[in-house]
Amino acid sequence: MATEHTQIGSVLITEEQIRQRAKEIGEQITKDFEGEKVIIIGTLKGSVPWMAELIKHIDLDCVLDFMIASSYGSSTVSSGVVKFSLEPKENLYNQNVIIVEDIIDTGNTLSYILKKFEERGPKCIKICTMLNKESRRVADIHGDYVGFEVEDLFVIGYGLDFDQKFRNLPYVSYLNEEDIEKL
Ligand code: IMP
Ligand code: MG
Image (cartoon, rainbow, N blue to C red; front, side):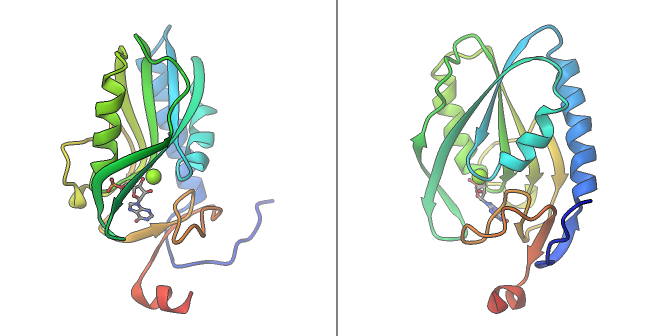
């Protein structure tokens, strides 16, 4: 039986919904890359739970890799000044690359990552994100595989943090001002 977690914030997306969507997207990726190899690169730390769910449904020759890219700016909006503190170890030349993200917000972080990866000469680069906050987009970035659209709310859980906390919640919820004051 699943562990009962204390509910933090208001639940937006349940574990069951995330699992179902990961299955659908994993099967779609399997179809789209039939007969080919893929390199799946997760962004640490937020994408870990989503990536773990997703890869169970990718029936392809695949290699996993990770990166840490942080963007500097004010606390709520990323600036597009991005620094890699861990770069993917795999050789991306002529490879099918799938970047796995927890959420695309302004798109500034991914925009920088894409530019850096393009320099490595991959065959293609696709983006698979659990959540998409389209209304906040600044950079010209779109997810090729999108789990769920979310409104302009501060979301936590299933990998997403508030001050490094709540990544372990088995659902996605959002925090309003009142919730944040109580934390
Ligand atoms: P972007 O460069 O603005 O697209 O920022 C993307 C990164 O900011 C994501 O990968 C998350 O790590 C973080 N982020 C954006 N929105 C949220 C949120 O609502 N909750 C938690 N983290 C978020
Ligand atoms: Mg992230």
